[in-house]
Amino acid sequence: KQEVTQIPAALSVPEGENLVLNCSFTDSAIYNLQWFRQDPGKGLTSLLLIQSSQREQTSGRLNASLDKSSGRSTLYIAASQPGDSATYLCAVGETSYDKVIFGPGTSLSVIP
Amino acid sequence: GAGVSQSPSNKVTEKGKDVELRCDPISGHTALYWYRQSLGQGLEFLIYFQGNSAPDKSGLPSDRFSAERTGGSVSTLTIQRTQQEDSAVYLCASSPGPGETQYFGPGTRLLVL
Image 1: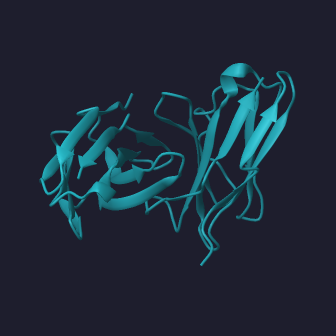
Image 2: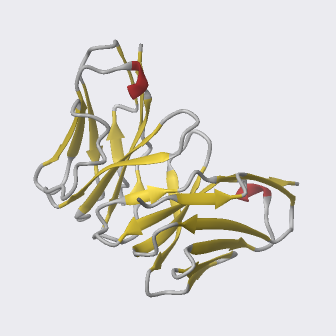
């Protein structure tokens, strides 16, 4: 059974710092991995989608990497801003892509 | 263009009543997903539709839950004989095809008294 974990559970950093969020999964037979952010009381916003054949994806200040063999993904946020404060979730699409398993999330707070 | 919409946005019901939640995906998206987010819990996958068919219904929490999708568009999630533990935010997402970027709706907040 696929299990997805995220470390740390919560993170507080001063504005301007670079930071890394970690996601681990137990079964490497995945179709893709997606990073989302969730703002309080709001829905989820997709940040980056990495297909299983890819190693990384970049969008602006965000870079996500995928190492399928070790069951890990990282989300790198450069030059963090207070507006980056949110909960960040990783989600693994299983090979049959009829199931998507979410991690518990990392709650990020960027202090001005 | 219009995003994923869900209705109602909030629903309060009494234990034992049936509720129906609706999801309107982005036009043209063939894949549709239902999730549940309980207070203090992570996102729980419920069911996935490709077109009108759901390959795997094992994610539904119990046989009180059912979902359907008609015309490859609107989907409804029905909960029969609601229980207090069904209280959660029910989220719907759609994607252009399986394994592609998912776009989420705002969710339906269900409270069972």
